[in-house]
Length: 81
Image (cartoon, rainbow, N blue to C red; front, side):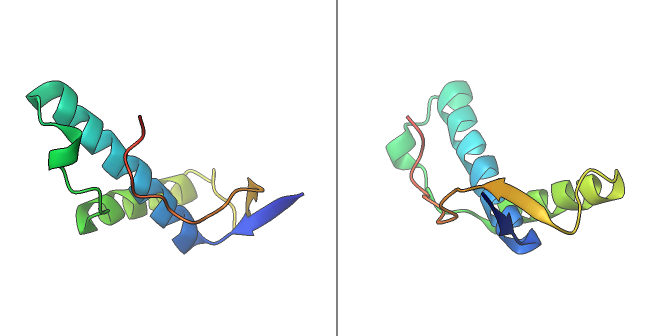
């Protein structure tokens, strides 16, 4: 059964995705080693995530009841391999 996810939880999860994407791009495009980048989510990541959620709400694609299939909502801030 799916577990509800709050709007704020969704924003945090999306911020983590945004930050991991930024880290990959820095590594790929500028040659910065992953271990030289701060894995912590930034305020910019949270702002982008808030903007995404607002746009999804505006488009009617996000309802008041977010259902995410049994996932651990603990955000792992380490970069993906």
